Image 1 (cartoon, rainbow, N blue to C red):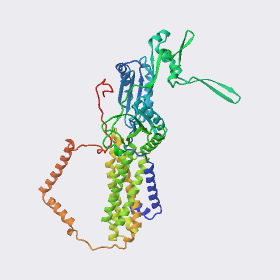
Image 2: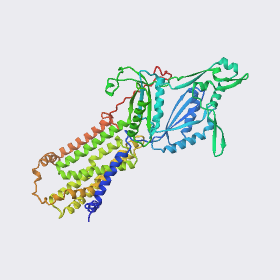
Image 3: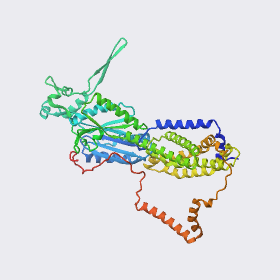
Image 4: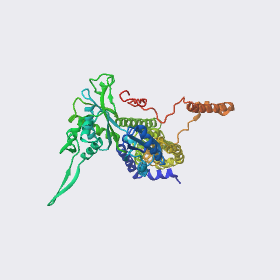
Length: 601
């Protein structure tokens, strides 16, 4: 009577279903490898919501005291909020609520919006209601930044070019958000003449109301004729300097008073808020950047692009760059330079390719080692089991919602040595049964050999899974970040067990059966004459015979353990969740004193 391993091996060893299962598993793995989104880091659900309030005329201190502090107290009534950040400025406040990792973003938004609506009556007079509520996520972090610069262009011109490019990039599929940093945007500035305003009896507040009314397109009605309906619209949006100048404010002494009669309208650049410069080092020429001076800073404008959740960072970045190349060639000046200052799509692709290479090298090394120790055909049997197991693991990883990133691939590399254990144990025992000819037929030998090592293999596999799975329940931000390691490794190990009991016996039957007739009871080797026995006995016999030496060995082992733990506690060995990453970018954050002007910073 066979156990679980023997029953599986007995059923699938000569079944026509087995090769089909192998091909289906490999096809699923190839499909997942192609379609799974590639990212540099795992996706972490950390719901964050921005609340933007306008309080015209209020100082930052007043905004904080009358708006921000009461709002923060109200938000703390929500149980899922972990942190609250706020920024108070002249007439403006931005409050960011960060929820616990794993909180449903939709539920968080609904709860916060409900809380805000219920507290609307508590807002002080003058606050513009309703506030702007905008959810944020990890995917809002730009995966691609493009820096526009040119020796012949100032910040105003660069901003206009960036706006043109921004509108085109927004059309790319799977682009979530595009925003421009730096430059001087276009601004219509109205400089009022106090004397003329007094002469006509017009107040600045009245002008603001008139401009707001004039900057609109209204549906005034419709004309019906036969089977046609003509929609009549009045008014238009103000776009040019002349549109603003010709806005009628009032009638004085029988003639209209235009805005240009009481104010000077200027169409030009706005005051700069964010200073962006670009400089180049000695490696610039290798990147094709010529004609620049080292150490010199050039005015620049940066366009940042973020992707939608669950999409492939590599594909989105490549699609945007193709569009940028086309727009630059067709619509932008030839002497305008566009430098890629961040491309997480490229780094994600590089890391995925690097880890895939390491995965292949690790698998090949194991197969080569088996070929040297057991034989070439035995190595092929194990070589079949490894890609089948990895293919199933990749497919299930995609089903769990994981992306292809350095953590998920690290999990597979981490488990590659354990994945082949089950197949190696089965193949080695089959090899032993063939050598000793312990069965009458190859089929019987393979099934009985698999059944013989089945229970210990199952126990060993589930022991390792039990040791890994607690990592999946780590809380905080590192929980979902590290979760692909225990999940992927455990899934891979479980299916490596099934592959060892299903695919390995089938492959052994197909590739190793001819060796059965060559086997037989060989001359017994005196194990005491082997080199391994001699070395092992010299080490172990003194420990077994002498009690002082045995206790000294125990003390030495305990001392090593204490020393190892002490190195961690004294930080002689630095503890990190992940090793240092080879980044190609460096960020320097300088926090100046409050009130320091942007120009000095």
